[in-house]
Length: 45
Image (cartoon, rainbow, N blue to C red; front, side, top):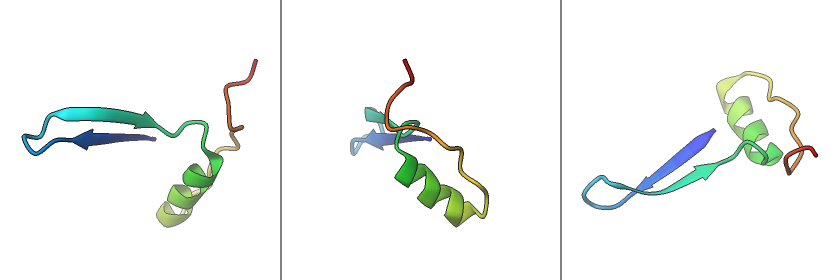
């Protein structure tokens, strides 16, 4: 899941990736009524 933040002109100023944030993924999946993938808080070695 990605989040794009923009300035007042609509230009992208920040991009955030929530791939390794299991609590955010679970909350969004719950809101959508689907199962979340099990992900660690960091990229596996």
